[in-house]
Amino acid sequence: MDFTCEKKDIQNGVAVVEKIVSTRSTLPIIGNLLFEVGKGGIKISANNLEMGIEITVKAKVLKEGAVLLPAKTLSGIVSRLPETVVGFKLGENGVVKISYNQSHFNIHSLPADEFPALPKIKDGKNFTVNADVFYSMIKQTIFAVSNSEEKYVLTGVLLEIGKSGAAGDNSNLRMVATDGYRMAKRGEKVELDGTGSVNVIVPARALTELSRSLEGKREGELKIMVSNDQIIFRYADIFLVSRLIQGQFPDYKQVIPKKNMLRVTVNTKQFLDAAERAAVVASGSANITRLEVKGEKMHLSANTPDIGNIDEVLNAEVKGGENVQASFNIRLITDVLKSISTEKVVVELAEGLSPGVIRPEGGGDYLYIVMPIRTQEAA
Image 1 (tube, rainbow, N blue to C red):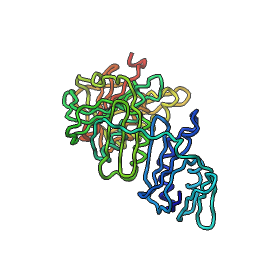
Image 2: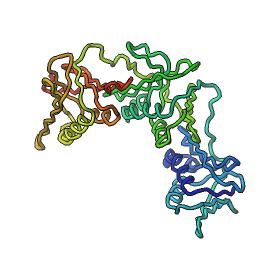
Image 3: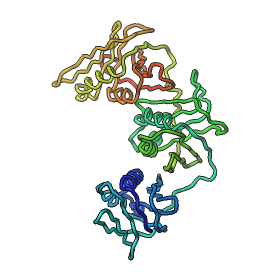
Image 4: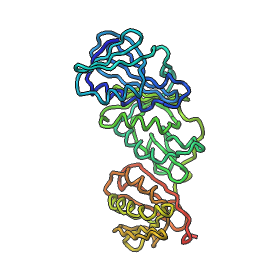
């Protein structure tokens, strides 16, 4: 194995794949990156047995070959190299010489044939979707997944293809996430000829790595292939494969409120700024913040004994009901407001312990439902 490449190219390639490397595994071999050097450039792969990722990096290949290099060590090296051409050459006893300018590193490698191969899907359903659209779908749902392994099925995002069956929902591609306290649902109407129906749970970590890989370059189509137990994503020079989460995702349609609610339209940025200020006080009392609509104003109030209280007032357009108040975990509200890009959002509220609903005004098929908190006032 012998090749040269630009420092920025090798650094970007290593950075994409090394994030999934497991440092706690009982199988030390997966703490390495696989370098496969061929005529088309270098393929760099990582595999933690739950998920694998591969990226192709352009290089001038002098001699083909394959080796395993320690992921964390290599990442530390390439991130600190000067901006210049870097050479990699496999020498005797498995030592790889990494040369740059007049200097070099020597690091020990392992044979490539010991590395577990990335799984391939032979029989699956294929479809393509605009990369920027899928990226935004991830960003508007993934923060609502559960972090608890006790709710393992909720640590992923439901990926659903086909007719929704919900009233007023014309989407054929949907992503849904919930942790039991809130739910985020994003739908799109896209071209999916011949795909058929799909209903799978994709681990949040796989979608996080995919969104990182798409940062800054989301033109073109993302190719997706799904089988019973795995999903593959292909975009440009990136290949990512992950196991699916097995289990029954909750019926999210049952959570969507069906009765009429008070609709409050407010400026998104002003709402987010007010919510973050309220969160400073609310952090001392389980993040509980009361939303109260009075006339054409929406109040956000929080009170923590020994700290103080706050009353934020926002101008609002109010339709469909009388004055309403309900209490929520304000952190669950700031999460969604950060993911909404429209100038205004619609907040739907009802008295008692009915869930609150937040939607972007005119922003397509996006729905966020947050459960209220029972307080003495509500009781």
